[in-house]
Length: 264
Image 1 (cartoon, rainbow, N blue to C red):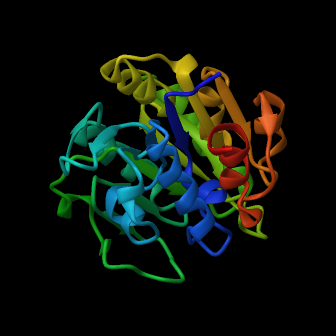
Image 2: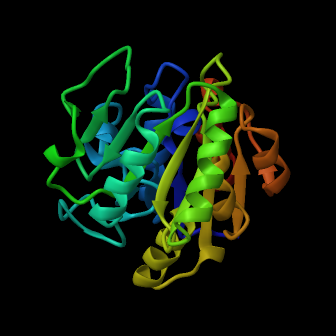
């Protein structure tokens, strides 16, 4: 089958465990485009974060913040599909800030960090002491627990108290730690919904998509596209949902599979 769209997650998938994109993966995507495919990057990262680790010109489109915003790389413009009402963000902050290890508020280009401890700050990280300092639309909230038990508790509370939101636990598959956090997005938007909207715009369907992923927020896409591929380093839940499994992100698993299926 010829796939019209080749799409990939970033962390744990396209990027190595050192958070870089290899020349092999870059070349594979460039060859995809030469072969007539539309390339799409789909990630929980925001736009500035993506640009810090990858040359975005290998993509035609980016779907960022877990599906809340579609960015046209050539046009250098995009649109929100959904965002979280500011009053709800404020209520969540009041409820969880003191009991958590911090909260990140994610806009298109910034991470606003409230009490979050990061080993390395980048230019798009803005430290705040009060959510009132933020004027931008917020597409995603990350709530960091002191323990994994906290994280599961936070997730249950958010899903029960805010049915209009979608809270999922996240795990960095590149990390040697098993630390998790809760990613909170608008309930009417996720990676799969955003990709389906984009494919409709492009005049094709989800069955025309080849997609690579490794984590919880990739499962909905993997189960809906023509071919969902799990990385060798993916969590078991993703591997079980996928049509196929490639080698790990540190072994150029995306390029390996693309070259086998599309670029020959």
